[in-house]
Amino acid sequence: MTKNTLYITTTLPYVNADPHIGFALEIVEADIIARHNRLLGREVFFNTGTDEHGQKIFEAAQKAGKDVQDYVDYYAAEFRKLKDILGLSNDAFIRTTDANHKLAAQEIWRLCDKAGDIYKKAYEGLYCVGCERFLSEKDIVDGSCAIHKKPPQVLKEENYFFRFSKYADKLLEYLDNPKAIIPEWRRKEAIDFVKSGLEDFSISREKSRLAWGVPVPGDDTQVMYVWFDALTNYISTLGWPNDSEGKFKKFWDKGETIQFAGKDQVRFQSLMWQAMLMSADISTTKSVFYHGFITSGGHKMSKSLGNVINPITIIKEYSIDALRYYLAREVAQFEDFDVIMDKFKESYNANLANGLGNLVSRVLKMAVSYKVEIPEKVKFLKYPKNEFLDNFEIQKAANAIWVWISELDGFIETEQPFKKIKTDTVQAKKDIQQLLKGVYEVALALQPFLPETADKILGAFSGNQAKEIGVLFPRNES
Ligand SMILES: [Zn+2]
Image (cartoon, rainbow, N blue to C red; front, side, top):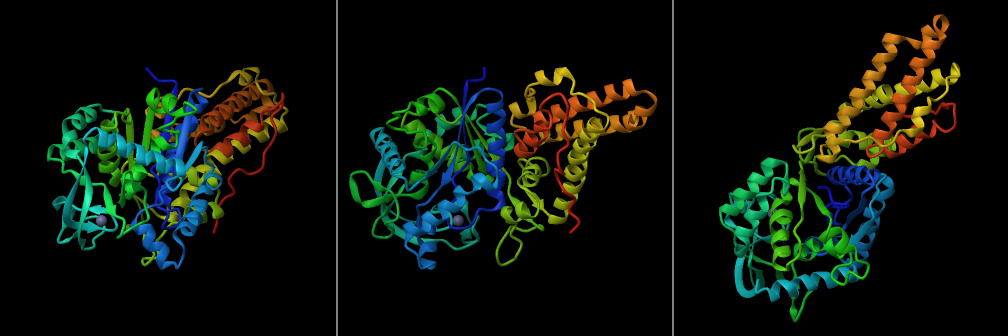
């Protein structure tokens, strides 16, 4: 049975670079699901924010010649702007440098410690700054970090460790739920990873090496690893542990909980974070969705290759809804996907300038020219059921809407009400009324995907007579 409340969150991006299109994909997907559920009448809490501690950020600030706090303040503000830039509906924006977040990170540490899951030991290991953690043998290929392709540093220090190994059985039980990880093949990967054996991992660093972090409770010489503190954001954003407003109880403890993350996050989100929750005796996350990576021209985006796709540039040239459309319908939901701007333009012109835009303007124009009244039943139409979105199948849901659009186009072509109006006015008006109803239904279904466009179309339907609206998506001929 579906629970009444839905908690939904993205991962928190590191604030050491501008927002990129991969994160835009994650947050727009989360936004679509959040809006869909609100439209169904569920109470939704949608979280995002910024991850602001750790060595990478400390070094980036130094490199930029900035005070670290000023540096993270600047980037946090940039990421906060995404709400307007991408037309998002998030309810919260948590920063891991917020005072209440730091308290929460310390509290979860205390609870894990109380459960006997934190111990101190001297440690020498291979450390990757990119990953912000010590690497195990599995992480190293040809002497370099498999993700960052850079040789790790040898680091020797006394750290606190988390008894990850203790949670292997519980994690397997957790992963037994088919909804724990979506897509299915990543769930299988996670199960294999747990079965191959879990190693306890280090969760703190010596303050003398890096002071930019949340202090370990009861030990002035250590700070927490950035991700141990950062993962706690998912509940600190709800006011945990004090929960004076009851949001944690309502949305996390009693509600349905969903996280969105990139495919390289499985170990952090579905294993380490879940083990931390188990240790602290807090409910685990119901489902975590992992999207693929976006590449550009067949390559990983990088400044040196000059192939970085900036979502803000796309929005300036096209529009918010043009980008949202592309992320929802064209980009593969779970596999890696290569964005080519020529194809973006092609799809925009075909499906938004033509397609949706053309259909809406033709139908409204006929209704206005021939003075066709909006059919009575349109007033009673509500946001339609959407089983695809209920199952988080965003791409399929978007495809279904465009199938509908082409069916309505097909109806115009076969019935030709613009010709029929001269010979059989009554039937032509009936046809146009049917089209008005169709356009209205399409607009209702579009609301989670293209909120601004949907509002514009629905706005044409006030009163008895439809109004014409301007061009929704001008053709891009550049
Ligand atoms: Zn690495």
